[in-house]
Image 1 (cartoon, rainbow, N blue to C red):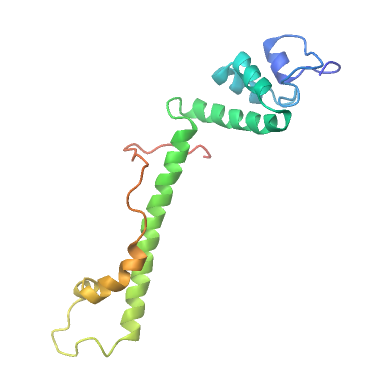
Image 2: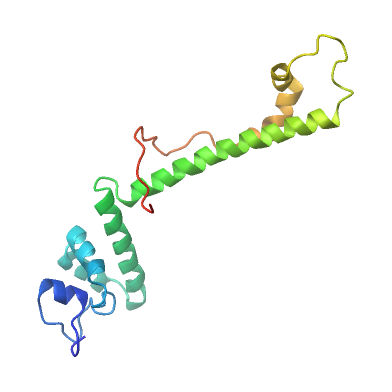
Length: 165
């Protein structure tokens, strides 16, 4: 950077910011926390080596990824962003199950409304539970219950804090 103000990395490392400083374009002086967290997790030397090995057009994306992973590692030192991904995949799986149940309930209600003549007219009318468990109803529910039940996501018995709250 050279002239006016050293970049955040040179400021933190207390060194003179050279004109060809590899950190200057990605760690501006007005955002020192961004470099501080990356430096704490990965180390300035490692980040410098990573950036030097990348083409210039990919470096900004790499810095963004490093900042994201460093923030995730600060919140969850063991799993990092993999913990966040696992948490979100678990939420998606739970929401898929809820959606399947809701779709099944909608289908049951629609079938009850469309086929009132098909229901028994005797005094011993079966209750709703037996209607839901009948073979024909179950066969009609199969397309709605074909969500992914096997998941590669490990279920965490402890509730985890979200990265975004």
